[in-house]
Image (cartoon, rainbow over all chains, first blue to last red):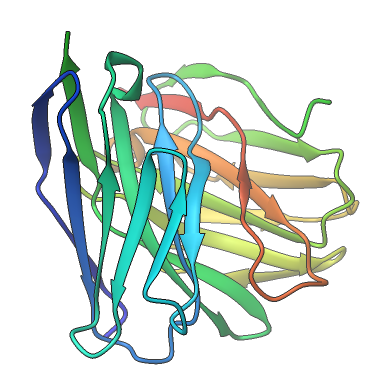
Amino acid sequence: QQQVKQSPQSLIVQKGGISIINCAYENTAFDYFPWYQQFPGKGPALLIAIRPDVSEKKEGRFTISFNKSAKQFSLHIMDSQPGDSATYFCAASKKMDSSYKLIFGSGTRLLVRP
Amino acid sequence: NAGVTQTPKFRVLKTGQSMTLLCAQDMNHEYMYWYRQDPGMGLRLIHYSVGEGTTAKGEVPDGYNVSRLKKQNFLLGLESAAPSQTSVYFCASRNRALKNQPQHFGDGTRLSIL
């Protein structure tokens, strides 16, 4: 019930295309869903996040779509650029044992070809 | 603005050796976390701390110990290193005050156990 399942494992997109990464969860107690972007040799950095009372959040070319009834959420990258090539992690958070913990998906390695 | 700093960045150990990884944050965050990142498995929580002098076990705590003697520092120790502990280790911190706050990550320590 604590798992977050992420797909695909890897993704290749042409410059200008749309990248879509999907995640699913089981525990309805999760109340915060962030996406992290990680470049080689660096730590994950928060990209965008959503609460379950919102169905969509957009920040520039990045959009999270959230389907509470299906317990699924996805990241859409519009007009994908070579600089977007990175590993993306979805995560889900809830308060557990006096702390807020993140449960991470397994990651998606995105390559945007020029 | 340093954020979260991890030392060392790389280390090679022999099986059975011990070592300590240091995490320091300058954001006055109460919560601190240690994760390990392995291919295809996302980030898994090892131990965490909700404040100075307190620590708790995460998802994969076996073989690791931690200490939080000062608010800004969180140490991860390997008592007797094993090849299965070869991984990239990330430290993170977050503010306790607000509910939906991101975790801020360091750039990791790449550890190889021979």
